[in-house]
Length: 71
Image (cartoon, rainbow, N blue to C red; front, side, top):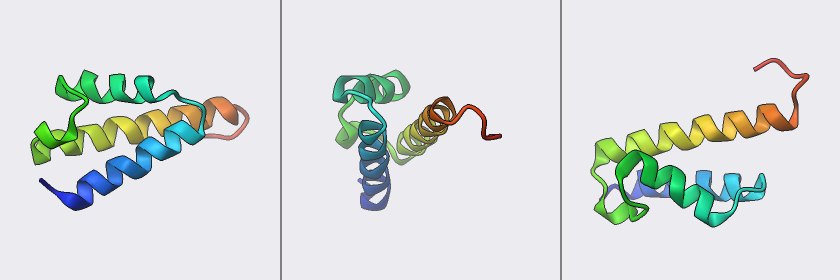
């Protein structure tokens, strides 16, 4: 298990929760990518996909909160 990637996912999960997402919504995003919300069952490649998906969701949420700013 890649601790650095797990830490990155954890930070992104916290950011999404701070932006107003519920834990179940974040877990659903992860499960949509990997088939499970359990990060310990993910391969390093899956963790990369999770990170990309969560970063995209953070960018989307920030754009929704600040619609006048260019993305």
